[in-house]
Length: 234
Image (cartoon, rainbow, N blue to C red):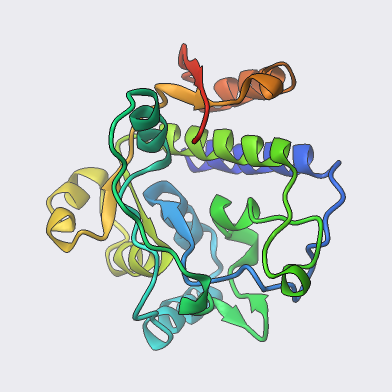
C-alpha cells in the first residue's frame, strides 16, 4: 500500500512538473497547522523517515502542538458524496492564522521527502506571502481534488485527520492497525473521520477530457479503479 501511495505521489509530481510555480525551498507561507492526511500517509511518513529525523518529528509535534487547528468533519470522498446527494454539509473551521505546521524549522520542512499529499498539493503561481493566498489554476485544483480522492480510496478502511493528531498516534504505536484505530476511542475524541471509497469524482465538465488519462493512471495505481460518476465540488 505504501509503495502504491509513493507511485501516486510520483505521478502527481510528473503532472504538476509542467506547471510554472513560484514554490521553492523556504517558501512556507502556506505551511500552516491545518494540514490533514490519511492514516496510510501517516504510516508512510513514520515508516520512511530515517530514525534520527523520526525522533525529531516525534519531539517537535508535542513541543509545538497547535492549540487551535483544523479538525475535519468529513473526508474528501464523503464531501463529494454529500454534494451529489444534495445533503447538508457539516460546518468546518479553518484559519491559517492559527499558526505554522509544527514540523517547520527555519521555514524548512523537517519531513519534506515524506510530506503528505495535502502539502504537495498546496502549490501557487505566485508567492503566497506577497498575495496573501495561493494562486492556483482551476485545472490544478481539479487534479488535486481527484488525487485526494484516490489516496483516500486507497486507504478506505482507514481514517483522516490533522497531522498534529495523526502522527503522534501512529508513532506511539507503530503496530496500530485500522481495526485497532476503530477501537481507539477516535469517535469520542472527534479528531478523525472515517475514510470512504470513491463514489463520485469531482471533475467539472470542462476538465473531463484532460483528466481522463490521469484518472486511468490513478485507477491502475490503486489497482481497484472504481466505476465512478463525475460530480462538481461546490
